[in-house]
Length: 254
Image (cartoon, rainbow, N blue to C red; front, side):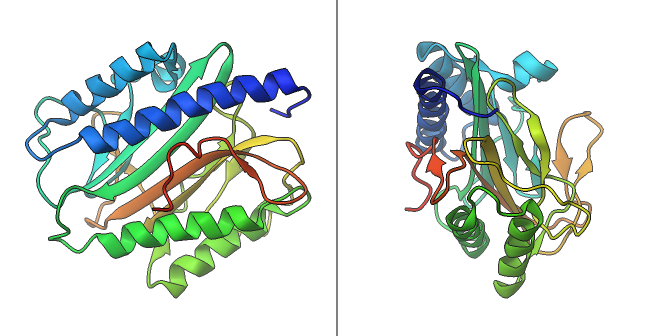
């Protein structure tokens, strides 16, 4: 989507605040001993109170209000009553939703309680690399160069990137042009970020694996070798300078 009026920007700001607020409160709500279904249902109630509708449910019929992935699950984890959160788990919550015809996407990984499994450096790297990438994005910049930056920063931190999960355009639907904003340098991708366009930028930072594989449930993506992955994501508007971070209500920099 490319923003053409103040009304469009206001609509995107409303849904982005709803998504970011839901994600922030879900992270604060999650505790050891809770099932991921409990956390998801809490998120579903928050979205409803804010007048928003779950994007994965609307778009794909996903069996949850949000995606909650734990440990070596990378993305699209199905909330489950049998999946009980444990101290030190690496948890990722991805919240995307629609409100009044506008869509936004926000995600983040965190360590539940004390970092007994030493996941925090991975989480910190994913967060910081997203922050660095956002600081370089503006109209006219090549998408491939941002992917290369993410990959280089991951290597510098001692990690790798997941290559088959990408950021994407968003705004009037969950996935729009550009359909692929990868976390690595793709020399064949000649597209550039366009001023006033709306995109969701994601960092998928891995301890070892480079690919995520779909599990038998048909939704969950996980690493085959047990590698851990931390993801962070913001919906932004491209400008001539620093982008407008629409989901900033979920302040992942802290």
